[in-house]
Length: 133
Image 1 (cartoon, helix red, strand yellow):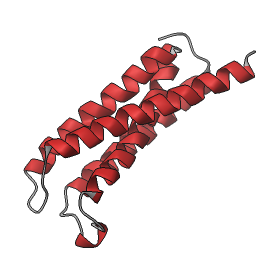
Image 2 (cartoon, rainbow, N blue to C red; image 1 turned 90 degrees about the horizontal axis):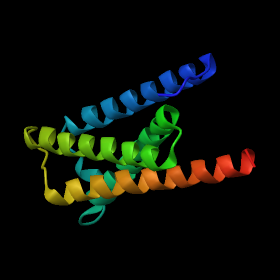
Image 3 (cartoon, rainbow, N blue to C red; image 1 turned 60 degrees about the vertical axis):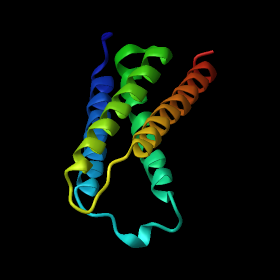
Image 4 (cartoon, one colour; image 1 turned 45 degrees about the horizontal axis):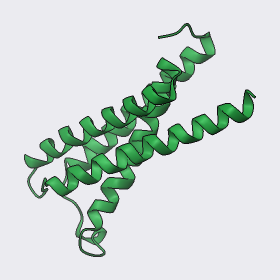
């Protein structure tokens, strides 16, 4: 990790706190049976998984950028950590009554994680090229 200012360390702490809070929210929601009202059409849960893990991948990418200052590694860290959390969450759901765990959910988590990390990494790259020309 490169040397950071006090403000950079504070921001890193806040970002890690957001990541931990968001993963805790996902864990909490997946610990309870899904309400049937959320299922508007067949396989809509895959969209929910993708959207939730897009956010997680983006947060992880931001944290990775704080650590590495490299777009490549920040995208890798964001996508990988969110994907691994998705796998562990599906394993957790396997043991929760009223929940199901499937390979389709893992694929949706994986796609969302990497898409979110790539989108955020693209935004970071565009922002830094524009600001630090």
